[in-house]
Length: 250
Image (cartoon, rainbow, N blue to C red):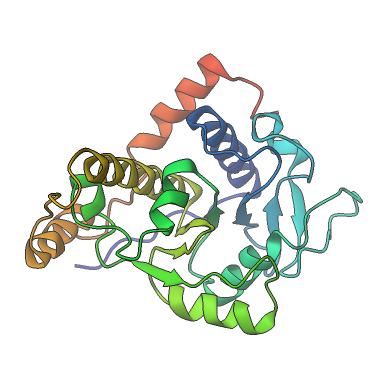
């Protein structure tokens, strides 16, 4: 069955969704003062992306203060806004390698960072984990610098997958929409929390399902591809933001 094409996205839609994702990440406790980023491709402007102004907390981000940058993190909208070009080194490399995705999220989320320190990575110990079974690459820690050689290694380990665990650093996920990327990070953080709590409660005795069952569950989750992660959840999440943290649409 051929999946019908979706209507094209507008810059205004992407701006609101990306600002919302920043606010939701703040509510979830995924932020790290002013560091880490969520970025999104600008529709109709190849090689141009939206990112937060450097120095803003996640709960200060709104649609109008997102900054347009190129793949090297250089500001291209004439605003002269401060951005973190070193922070965009990861995002720029991923966007350049994956034109099929709209959004890249890289965080220093508490449970995600802890998961990235485990040699076994994500295990099929919860239903949340099944969605990402076999869908996460792994990238060894190489320090703070991220030069061209490491960028190539990172995108190779991501490949066509949904994300990559940056060892001793934090998780990264991609999505065909901002909503999809946000939901994948939500599932990853929940799965990491469940796995690490189980490992702490019962060291050496945590069980996971068989790989074949994990794969089958993943297939059930993604279905025929007509419904993406975030399609159902995103409107409810925006309604929550409108109640508890309005202003992201400004």
